[in-house]
Length: 478
Ligand SMILES: Cc1cc2nc3c(=O)[nH]c(=O)nc-3n(C[C@H](O)[C@H](O)[C@H](O)COP(=O)(O)OP(=O)(O)OC[C@H]3O[C@@H](n4cnc5c(N)ncnc54)[C@H](O)[C@@H]3O)c2cc1C
Figure 1 (cartoon, protein in one colour):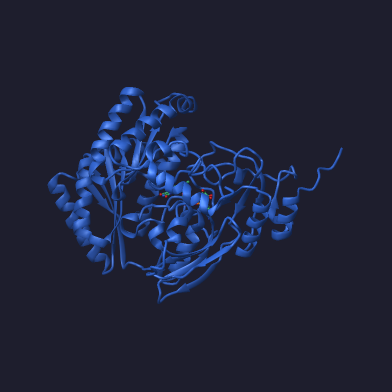
Figure 2 (cartoon, helix red, strand yellow):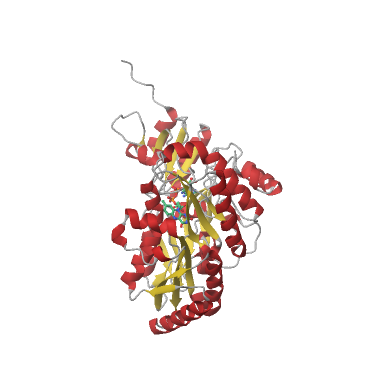
C-alpha cells in the first residue's frame, strides 16, 4: 500500500499551528463531525482540515498560506449558527478555521465601560467576566453556553435584550480582523466617536465570515441593574400583545429589557417534551408574553411599576392573566421555558424555519393572513410562532401535520412554504432574515428579496476585500 503524498498546504499549516491543531481525515480515528455538521444536524460537509490557531499572528499566517494555495477558509466559532454558514461544503477542499482556542479576556476598562475579548470566547464566559467585574454584558441568547463572540459578531446576533441594548452590532466598539490577504487590522479602539471615514467595523459585523476573520473585539459594558423582574402574561391576541408592548415602552422606558411572544402551539411542544418545566397559563390563551423590567432603583420600584402596568393592561383587555416571578430562580425558570421552544421543536421532528422581521405595527395582520394562507395551501400544518416581538422579529416556523413523517414533509413542502412566507414578508415590508443571517441556506433567496442596488453594492464590497473569494465562498452571496 502506498503512503499518500504530503499535502503542501497541510504541511505549512502544521508548521504554523502545530500538528495537533491541524485535524484531517488522514487519521481515520479523528472525528471531524463536530466541525463539519451544522447544529440542526441537517447538513454536513467535508473539510480538507480543521485548523485551530491560538493567536492572531497564527490566523494571519494561516490565511496567507491558504491564499497562496487558493484554498477557501470557513471561519467557525461555536457552530451554533442556524443557516449553514460555518461548516465546509462537500468538496473536501475547504479549511475550517476554528477560533475556539482564542478565548482569552484581554482587558477590562471600567472607566471606558469596555471589555476586550478574543473571538473564540464563549458568550456565557464573556457575560461571567463582565459580572465578576461588576458590570453587565447584555447580549443573551439560547445558545450562549456554546456560541462565541466571534460568531455573534459574524452573524450580528440578536437575542432577548435587543429591545433595550440593540443587536451585537450596537454592543461593539472595536474589532481586530485578519483580512483575506492575511493582513491584521488593529481596530480595537474602544471609541464611541470616530468619524474618520467608512465604518469598516460595521461592514465586518454581520458579514458571516465573508469579508474578514474577526480575531478580537472591544465590547460595551453596562452597569448592572439594581433589580430585574420577569412577568409572564396571557394575552388574547397578537393585536393585544402589540398594544401591551406599546404600554410597556411608555411605562417602563429603558427598563423594558425583554419582550417575547410565544404562541400556544409552541408552548404546547415545551409542555409535551419538557413537562417538568411547568409552562404557565398556556392552555387558556392563544399567546403568552414574557416581559422583563430592569430597574436601576430597587426591586420594590420595579415590582410596583410592573404591577401598575399589568393592571392597566388587564383593564384594557390586553392581558387576561399574569404571573410575576417572585425571585431570580423563578425568573430564570420562565426564561428557560422560552429558550426551550427551539429544542422542543427538534424533539417534535423536522420543521421549516423562518427568522423574519416585520414592522411591529404590521405583525398582527401578517400573522393572521399568513397563517390562513398556509392552512389553505398545506392543510394540517402546525405553526410554531414565537420570537422577539419587541424587535419585530418572529421565528415563524412550520411543523408537519400531526402524526405525519416530518422528514418527508420538509422535503415535499420546504420550497413552497418558504416562497409563500417570504413573499408575504416582502409584501409586509419585512426581512427574510432578522437575526440568523443568510449563510448557504438563504443564498439563493437573497436575490429574490433584497433590493438589487443593495445587492450590487454588496458584490462590489466582496470583490474589493476578497478578490480571490477565499473567505467563506458561497455564503451570503452566490
Ligand atoms: C438554541 C439556539 C438559540 C439561538 N438563539 C438565537 C437568538 O436568539 N438570536 C440570534 O441571533 N441567534 C440565535 N441562534 C443562532 C446562533 O447561536 C447565533 O447565530 C450565534 O451568533 C452563532 O455563534 P457561533 O459562535 O456558534 O458561530 P458559528 O455558528 O460558528 O458561525 C456563524 C457564522 O459566523 C461566522 N463566524 C464565526 N466566527 C467568526 C469569526 N471569528 N470571524 C468572522 N466570522 C465568523 C461563520 O463563518 C458563520 O458564517 C441560536 C442558536 C441556537 C442553537
